[in-house]
Length: 134
Image (tube, rainbow, N blue to C red):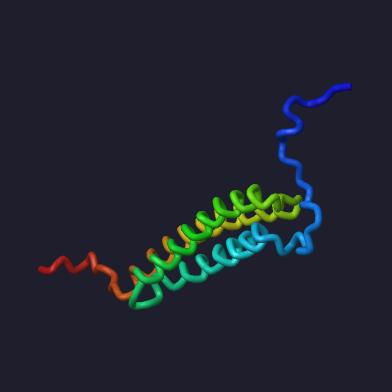
């Protein structure tokens, strides 16, 4: 019979025993929900970067949402291991939240670049090459 080395040290995704809280309400899972919400909020605030008179506020807000979501990713793993709240749902939520966060950061870059290129030319008049000033 083959036994994997260090099998006892490997993390097994089982809910802790004698827990009255359902798995979707584990603290790490709630942090994953918050990360997903922050990712979508960063997309929403990225749209407002070039449409308002205060774009730096929205750039800072978008960046803050992303940094906070990244920090919660770190904290979520630490809490899951320290409180023994590892579950298959939590592992799946973590992967989903990571991909949504990564995708939202790319979407924010694309939205900001599209809005800056389109709004930068709105008030400029085309140059008339036939009249060179003479």
